[in-house]
Image 1 (spheres, helix red, strand yellow):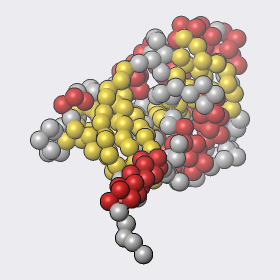
Image 2: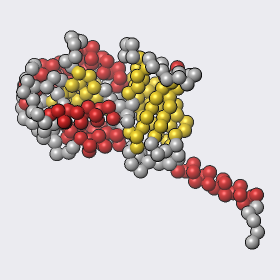
Image 3: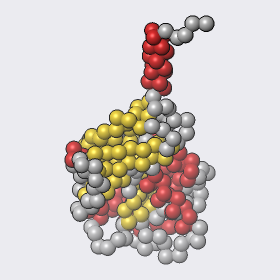
Image 4: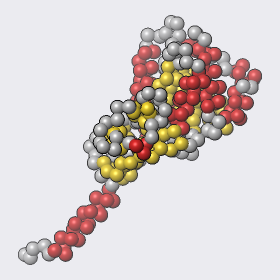
Length: 299
């Protein structure tokens, strides 16, 4: 039997290379690299991004800062717990302040207690505010019942997926409790990761007499926020004006660092993702903090 000729070896190598390339896949995530000193976006062109995906070889990682209007669903808690500690007033002012910081975005409103309601479909900020401030609409916000927070977030994500755009975001305004959802926090997180929708949370103060079980759902919600690359801001931290938090939150949503990379083989299930930034000489940049999804999902 004759040995393999050089030409045959070349063909085999080219074939293997072609198969390997055909199996590779391109992906991206949206992150926020911010200066620790003032919370402002860091200059991406002065940073070198490194990406690790568990079980995969990553190549061609690079980042680009993108600033653009976004599709944002405001998910507002109108359950009974919002009647305590002036939470209703803080919640409604938070919506108005966020609108003031988001003049060019498309915004929608989902209210929830033990059910959820798409009260305002995606609108410009002025059109949204006109509907939100309408006397009849305001009188309809009665703040009662349980809290189906996870269901409301999943429903918001499903609506965004009808016309997906880069940077789609769900912003929850709530004390973080959930006692009425038919679906759980794990299902909510999987849906958000699969669709690359980032979850943000304005965490309002809990009621004076909270349910002992609320802490678990609040913790699950905050974990989901961080796992999708979002941020938690506590509304009761200090005497920071609510418009200040709204501007800070909106800046994180609107100004995002898109980190692109290639994987040697496609993902079959969500995989752990680690993104870090260093200075051009390869040293870890301790002045910059990165908020990035903790998992990447199959496309």
